[in-house]
Image 1 (cartoon, rainbow, N blue to C red):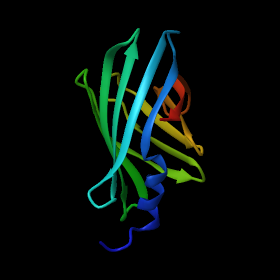
Image 2 (image 1 turned 30 degrees about the vertical axis):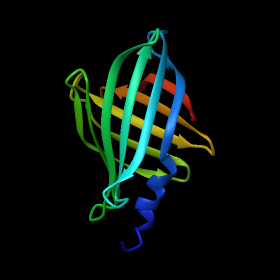
Image 3 (image 1 turned 180 degrees about the vertical axis):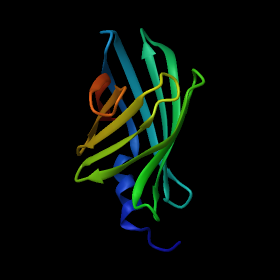
Image 4 (image 1 turned 135 degrees about the vertical axis):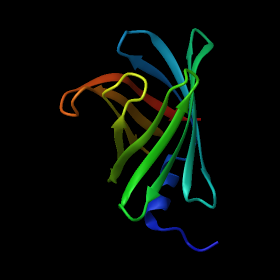
Length: 146
């Protein structure tokens, strides 16, 4: 294997197993878990997410994040247990922050995903917007590395 471009190496900062209490827009106490691993020789990050309410898994999502070299930006494709999916979601790493946004297939409008990387945790926020100017937080959490 040749050495990875620096953009792909940045994805390795998200690798690991994480768990955290989530704050949702409707005030429910939810728990989320992530298992993130590099795949395909380290060029992509695979994310496996599940959300639980009172110890029962109620939602699952799979995603892949990679770097689009010609456009010089990160991208994400995701699929979930409610039949939802997201493609055309793009963004950038700035310091310790990865932010990706694009169309919301399930609800219309747009979604924005933000990961802030800390030494042993990730702060993740999911937001929604009708116009890409005014954003509402749907979910915010601090996930601790397990």
